[in-house]
Amino acid sequence: MSQENPPPTGRTRPKPRHDTVTRLIAADPAAIFAVLRDPARHPALDDSGMVVQVLRGGPITGTGQVFRMAMTMGPGSTYETDNHVVVYEPDVAIAYDWSGVTDAEVLRTIPFPAVPREVREETLNLLAAAAG
Image 1 (tube, rainbow, N blue to C red):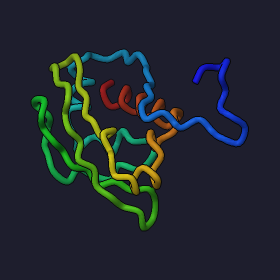
Image 2: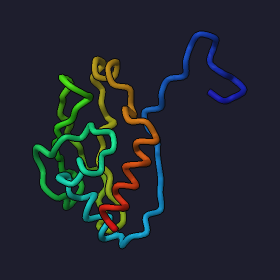
Image 3: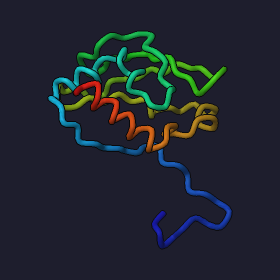
Image 4: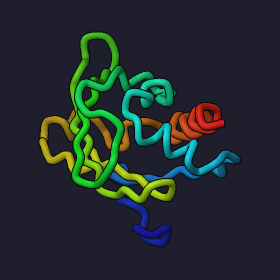
């Protein structure tokens, strides 16, 4: 909906399933990439506290790989995610997709993106420090 056509009174606009945060990191691309391609390092980058540990999958070496992470939404609320590597260009681009969630119960329970923008921005700051 555009600003000219706000949602009807009493209804809220659905939260977007995709959102992007960006930051310029003054580090060697290979150093940044080394952190991102290693799922074992992801918990240290996660300012939300949701990423607990890697359960399966070593350093990423190409598209099609899947790595599993233990996650939490707080005490008593643990789950696992399978992250599918959809883009892999060494020292240039890497992407893993968890946004293809289709389970209706999960979508009712967890709003996507589940982490506020400010927390994702801090994650980029942690990445900069780790790659620095």
